[in-house]
Image (cartoon, rainbow, N blue to C red):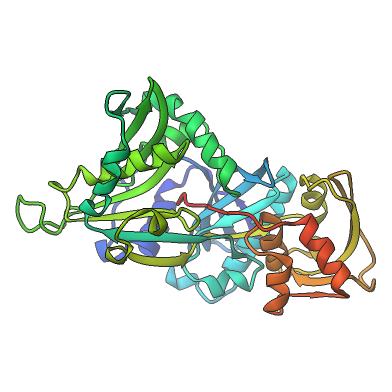
Length: 409
């Protein structure tokens, strides 16, 4: 018998599995509560797959974060899955699939609507119904590339100020404006601000706020690598992992702040949404190394509950959707979605119903969060529709939007 259940107090085994999976180059690491039970490490709920033999060690483990993500203008319960780890003696036995199946069942019981994770391998999780949630833009250049922004800063009316974790509430209004721009951005409680934003894995980052007329209008979170050969700046990189702003003036002020680190860093690495118009803003875009990568993965937990809970545009429509879900039997089959004045109702139909729309649960998830439009999904054969009218209805119900899930967990 195989059982999915919480891992109670066996933090040593969880640490062992996680260390082997993600930091094998460090060799066996003895568990030390004083060293390893940091506030950041204790966030989340540990789960595992167990069998009924004499060995009560879990076959594989994971951690769940209970989150809320902004989708279609409203926050929805979201499960963040992390630290999925299986020791080599238990691999290739289907335990991770059972772990994912058990996790989805728990999510459903808790009313969670979306499941997100950062994959080690996209193809692996795609077979279980997860799909890409968004793209990530990374820019790298010398700090002086942003020097142009200095002329846009009114130093008499503004200032930069370093913040401590106790001052995180001063950033919340700007962060909420950021969340209004991007789907899948998390709602943050005090613990998340303290332990995931102001707290780092090994070294805590710097957090600076930009104030204009005595009000915070933007902030950035950044750190420096330690790969320098001497005490000079040679080889050092300043990595900006979060940049949030109220308006264009604030975004330029933050870039000017980065430029002022030219004496400390040789390079700047900026991680932002791919919708952030950096190349259209800097005078010398050819001096900026640009890379676009795929980000986290997302999947719907329960089709009926999620489609019924979403906010829709002020349009009316009714469509039938056939969903293929390899992991959650409750999502396998046909469903009818009816939207009246922006309020949706979804009901399950018989499995043999001829549907207007046919797609896999991963593609449906991308459509729901706004990462891909119905027309784009059809173009790549990830969605089939009965006719052009159905496609137009889908386009009206699920307009494409900017998506940015940039927080690693």
